[in-house]
Length: 290
Length: 315
Image 1 (cartoon, rainbow over the protein chains, first blue to last red):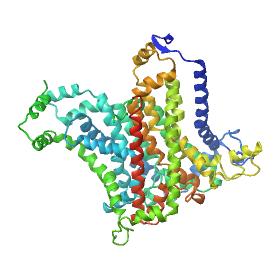
Image 2: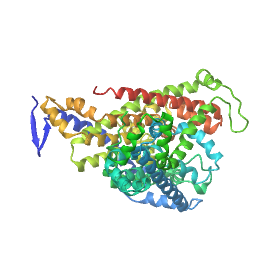
Image 3: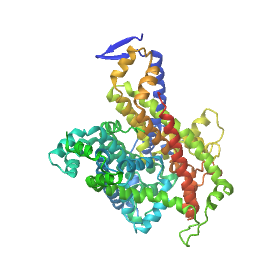
Image 4: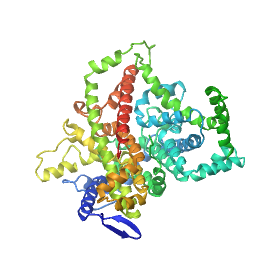
């Protein structure tokens, strides 16, 4: 018979102290492995020039200043295409790609989750299969298709493929399966609401956490996108590409490069901090049944 | 009884053939087709067609310039019997995937499990720490600075200080160290979607099952994990496995950024790099399509095998 212990009305199993200690040690070690490089990059970005070149190198900065960030902005102002243009490009493709994806994927997810129709299961299975391979496999033939459609070197080459990304649709469909009760939809239909109306006014408001998750996933992908093989024109390229050009200046730009990395990573991390609980809620239904 | 179930009763009658029934159902649910149409169009155009097209092109010698000829399986024969670099790439890819896939899967699950009983506030902070590297863009480049080739690199300086090294080691330019280091970096960025899915899955396990388990004689947390937790989150385990496997084949960009392309003695050359080399640089589209097709089959095959294995958990 196991020992039972009550903690705030919950019955919990006895936890051995050795196990607790072991887990704490493992978690601390793994946590250090994860967080130290992140701390290092922040510390590098704050180091003045002489500290960047010091031997032996110090892990943490001793006299932090913002010189590297100033250098980065100077370098940005010197770029041939105005830096604001790169920002505009990334924002436009991120927003266009993300909202198109949200709209198309949620419509399809609603139909696949809540309407039984011939072919629905097959279509979902096919989409689910595409989670199983990485998009590099299709990069070259996608290029051929895009050139046939005259999409190469336009914003569409980034935006339209994002609409059809798979993970967002998958998570949305799984979430709708559990979060939208069939009975609510049935009664709406009985009241004479059309299917499209039911989707928009009843199902969609019930899956807000999934929207947010889908928006964040799609946005992260587009935000972190570097140089695309589908874009040649300098004035259509992304911020990430521009920053990689600045930091490609080699060792003398180490400080500016660290500053750029910190600024670029701050955006997705902040977005995640704000939306964490919603994303975890969506992931609750992410499981695959078969 | 709702209108819908009444209708379904009606179509179960024997006076309709299967074909007639399908047609009737399709007509009745025309809105569903309307709703999925835009997504399915984009999905077909940029996912389904490219896969099919790459299988078709892999049987030709297409090079973007001349009319392609059909060469049947010549590309595949060259790939497996005449291309030594491809065989190196295969070996590297398998080593890479066989270590990174399971290790990231295990790490994602263990960390999620370790933090499951922490208070929500601390749990969300720990989640952030472990999840950040996977979403922070090109932050993995910092490993290049940590393991820089000169004595200013932090790893070199530290090892020389304690006397392990006498002169700086060129970490990413040495065929012996480049692969292990890339694996470490890949692991560092690998606690992504599957990690979040596990956290949510663990939170979702029905508490009453644990209480019932305790009464039934589950003695410690390991038994609890094996008999209660794992079986109740099988769907998440499945989804996480697929994310981990697909991810473990997709680290080409990380390797290129740190080790350069081509890497020293092809020591970190993967199938992805080979594909990029022939498709993106030499424009031998027929040959690179054969590489893509092989890679596709490997990924889908690995997923199928693992899915089968996970379906046996707890049964």
